[in-house]
Image (cartoon, rainbow, N blue to C red):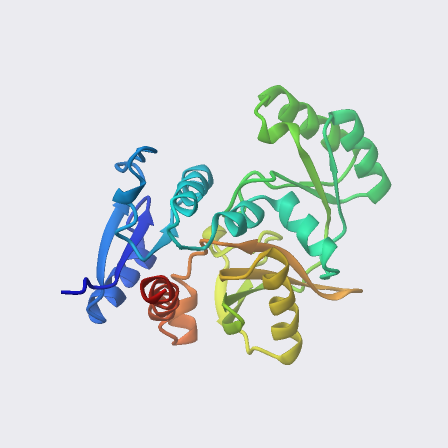
Length: 290
């Protein structure tokens, strides 16, 4: 008797998105396992234990845990959503910027330095204000808007003193006077599924930081830039963040490979979790039938 197609869902915590994804799996009668990344382990001498899965959907909160799990799964020959290569690029702002620049996709002006002295020189070349971001991080955390040289010197000294590998990379971005919002567009393969304006009086507009969601129609311009951005990082299941630049028009700010959608799903009226599951099933089916 031929076995059934089987999917693994790798997660860190059961948030509302994971509840919706599990529900969509069960609604469709899909054979799946919930894989808590805090409880699983990988034995490199027993890769066949993971080959029971025709695909694994990665929803880890930790970038490192998710990335290393994807690397191992891909090395074992297990298809994943997204691939390790895509996760590596999207989870690192500098890698994302490099990929976008390589393909000529519009983005905010940015620069990178590896010492406080070089970072200060780059900031001064930009002119104030600028935004200093960690290369790895989400939810708008550890972002700093730097308004003058005194603030720049203080923040650079703090990052240098913290001393971690991530804090030794200084990612500098121009400050954009946004119209009180930015855009989050969900890409599934080559399709712009739906979009949302994230409105806020604060310059950080993430809904995790109190921003509110409003439906954003998918225009040909939005679809084009998001498709180009998706292809630049390797494609898959992505959340593309856009900013309306006063001179450049739409630019790509960031790309998320394990995006949240607890605000987007009710705002859009689209079963995003169901669409994610259908996409993962499609990847699994190609492996199952291949």
